[in-house]
Length: 497
Image (tube, rainbow, N blue to C red; front, side, top):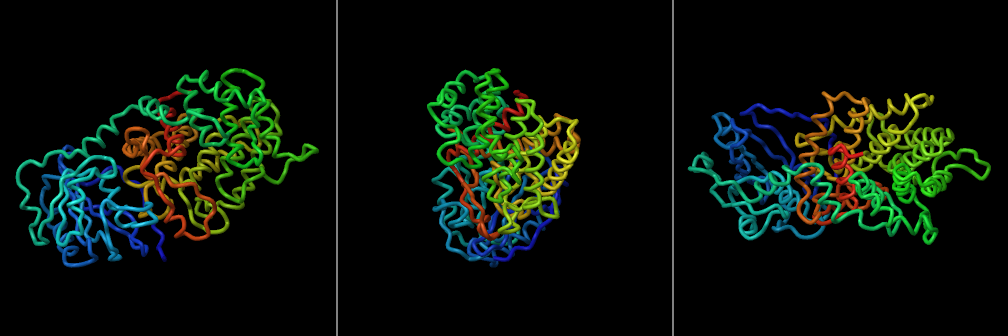
């Protein structure tokens, strides 16, 4: 699959009657599924979604394109979304889509989930249907609620037949409900499902537990950590790895909140893996596997060890490790490749460095010789990432491929990192606060009842092709990784410390 690179910038305000190009997803053969947006005069106007080309680029596609041009020339009474070619690769579609999104049935999954987040009030299918209207009549769209739909003839003036009021759809009501939640409210909702165990010391459970502590639930977290403090369980496990190192950040948080030196010793033991038996710094923290994840996995725990012990060597090692990882994975354009195996800028492969740099800077001494360099690295990454945030506030499964799916865990991590920078004066509030606010609204929209999250990429080791990253599976279910990062973002938005 050959994909051309796309450079695009976030735009937060839009002209009322100019069609804007959006991206729905990618077809199985790598073509972008595109949409046009024509805003209405009023933000309270209903939204109509017009779909053509469910069987490929045909007359219905051309009719939809002509209708958009005609529609935008007049003062719209409703907001119009239009997908002229919903199935550019002429794949066999079935709705609701089956299999693993977006590995299986990518066109159907892309359209179905995109419709849920856009939450139109009415869907019109121009020309041949492939069972979409029937599926919409009997199913909630990606657990967001129902949307009325009907097939219409693909002809000039097809939208002019819409008369009277267009009632708000159930999906529209549900997305509005989700977006109305306050940060503390979302954090508490997620805490009912995530951060409830510490059976293994990993960053996934560790981040959720840190969020719980910021919500005042320190005593509950201490109970979960007790087997590691008593020695009944080894926090490094039989086979330590990078996930384990980052999981020790929960012990660092407990050490700061309780003053218990036993937590400090657990942090020290993890950080000491960066030194040889003679106390000399290694080339980098172990277990990095050349992956950009290690900017977070290795550096953050070293900085916490330095803060908790007052020993400069941990800060020195953190700076050394960051330099090592940048040489491996930082691209000339300021984004991170996930590993040297391919130049692909995987979503979490950039979110991990963002989070790692933000957490490291939080506690890195300003009088250290490397502080300025680390701050510059952080600012440069935030600027690079800012160029690829979409109009809704999301970052994508592959950062610089706009038609790859909008990824919830990466967005939570990057927005958290920007918000931490705003509050510490590392970033300009005027430039970055709108990005954080847009990201927050979109993350809210993707988190439903019972801790269900949409579009969190599955666990991902290094891949060797761009296509492999584009086809990583995505959740529509409970997801501990996404839940933890969304909790952390929510706690930061709530100002919980």
